[in-house]
Image 1 (spheres, rainbow, N blue to C red):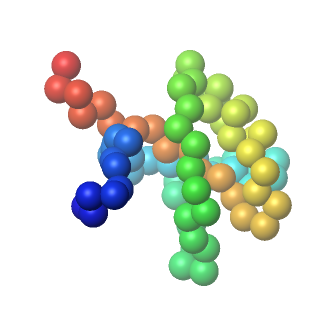
Image 2 (cartoon, rainbow, N blue to C red; image 1 turned 135 degrees about the vertical axis):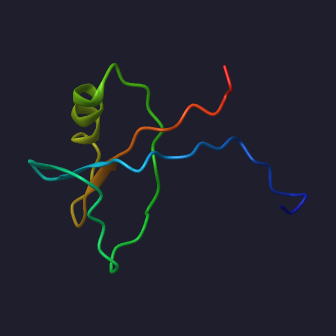
Length: 76
């Protein structure tokens, strides 16, 4: 990593995902090869249903939003 860059943290995503496109919620990561990661939000939610409520608020007019749990790598 270049000296000017500073890592703020990292987490591994679990393999499971929930995809949201408009009002349609589906289980599983269904990103197509023509799509790209435009950014991410790291949020703390009570459970999956709460995370989906938050994800529905994200503006994604030409794509979708994936909700993915992160793995606890703290070792504790």
